[in-house]
Image 1 (tube, one colour):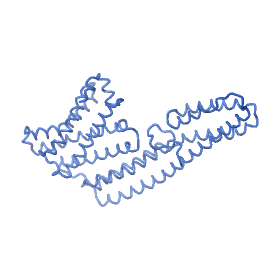
Image 2 (cartoon, helix red, strand yellow):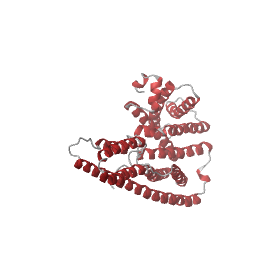
Image 3 (cartoon, rainbow, N blue to C red):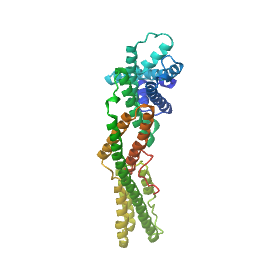
Image 4 (cartoon, one colour):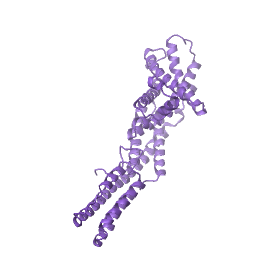
Length: 378
């Protein structure tokens, strides 16, 4: 267990374990997330290929011993920050049950548990489900630990479906009932390409609309900057000896706005102040009223307004529902280790496109900064 953690007060430790602010906290939660995902993936491999790591084998001991070490450290830390609520108690129970399978493997290898019967192994499989719950619980922390990007957001969807796949396998093994076998494979093979086609067409249309908007915002930005540069040149020409600070500060504000450092109401207020400053410089020049109002004000207003136009959230909700349905159909239609890789590849491609399109649709987006409608080279 990291020594620094043991020196912290419970409240500070609770904050660090939930929303880490230090490098140590992020590294620890990153290690925990990787360990949980590895343990769940290992469960799947064990179910599909039991001979790879049978009970009592050295390879199983090494893997479970590593998992046991990390899980026990995490459990001790969680006990230290527990506040006695029902939610904390439920989470502690999940964390404890996630430890039990690894502890049993280690004790069995050491000779302390030799008489393991079939019923106990079935119970052991149910204990393993706690790891899946632990995985789903830590899924939301992925973005906070590894940063907001297309890869981390897609990774969250991949871990959810990995957990769902292993959940079905563990339940089937514990109950001796083939849940996946209930589904008609021929019907699934019709449903998979049908839903996939609808999903693909929806993505293609949406991507085209979002890309067009992205190009339009970039063009409006250039036109607004050109109009501002023209007005600035005219002001310098008609008043070469007059001190005027110009619009340098506003240009920096626009850059900060496009980098998500300034909100829309704030940039709107600063834009109004900048236009009033320009207006004061040309108030004695009636001939400049037309380019000021028709070019500068109109262009800047159109540009800022366009950055706030986006698809309705319900549309993305619908798109994500289709995506989840498609991924689940692939899960049921493609069992086995090959099916896992196929499903993960499908999720990586299609869910990644959903995330990218959602981000492209927001000119200023505080959630993802890898792709969006900032001023791009188009």
